[in-house]
Image 1: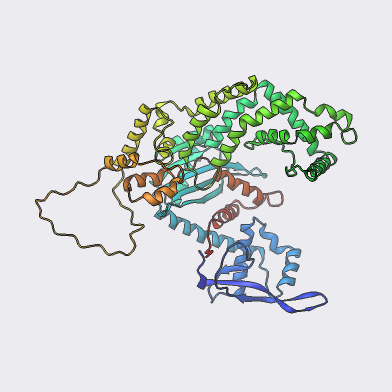
Image 2: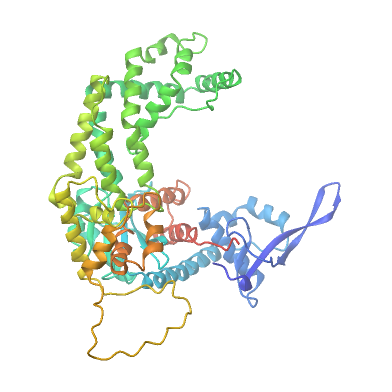
Length: 563
């Protein structure tokens, strides 16, 4: 939140008088609006005190603009940028690259202190982590933090992105995680760390006994899909699909014809928008299903183009799929479609926790992947393979599963708290697990809605009079379990409304429901890292890379007053 009293905004004033060359641009003048409505639309704003110079504010904002859009710090040295600023704001002094870098480092230190202060107020924090190698063969590790505030709002912060030149052994990864936890004052507060299924990072989790450890749900789901793609009939058709899509991707003539024919179909009444073919990438989740789905949608247009002698060479005609192969493409898209939707849903940043995991697993195994009448032998084989893989990897019927953190999170989600997908005898084990957690929780009623109401005077009571017993752990839990399920209200919103009804259960829910279902938050940092460390900036110092990514991700989470 930007304090209105401390916000200065530099805007370019355009003179109403015009000449033959168009509007005349005056110098950059200070302007103070009644209210700042967004932190994204203005180019030259920054919070600076009246004693600070206009020049200093310009330097700071140039630094912030660079990290916000992942621009090179050297953009201020470019002649084109300087010419543009000379035309737009002649009085604006463009800072040098060292000056911008110094402001980035200062802003990083300030923002890091702010995050440490926020984390001090959090009662529990969950982490995600992942490693990545840049195009200059420099390895990095990222750690993100996730926690709920007093208003049950989920916060996600990037804690660090740092070079990791040492070997990625379990011991070294565990050492980095422990270092991060100590550095941000999170000792004793970490509930769980979510990561991918690599053996080294899984073993690192066992070396950090102070918190729980869980594998990324989306990554595990993709491992279940992999054997399906390796089925002989599926693998053969996918190979031909890749060649067919590659033919369109490498030919500008054929691609242009694909767009022209779709435009013609739209004019003739087709409502489908103009689409492009999608090439799958082994490391990109869902890309194979998306490739098959897009081919299935464009089957008619692709077939017409491949059979047109004026567009397609005779030697390329063999790339076209046969009717039976087109049927397999449709089957792959249909069977894997729900997994694409699940992966996309579980990779969201907000309102999704690890508590969604087992309701989805049981629904996929017990409903979506069950055999149906009139389905092909290939579809039946794909479903069987998926069911077997999910049963092996998620182990939905084992005792360890019903006492796991994801199952506890499902119990604490008002939409799933009856655990109707579990056999009755197994639900009690999850209830017992929650009772054990409640025994360790100090009784503390939230004062979020107390306001400034005065506390009424207590009526005098004789010492020998019988008083009502205080609410016990069992009472709090039984009242929660006896309540009705609320399918329409997200878990965090439900707890925001009902925290004071079940105060002890709410404290456990605040810790457990902040655990992310996937390690996607860390992987998204590396997507931005690819923009920072590119072929033009592959010699950038690792410390400034970490500062840029820290500011880029954390500053975007700052909300401005929009009222």
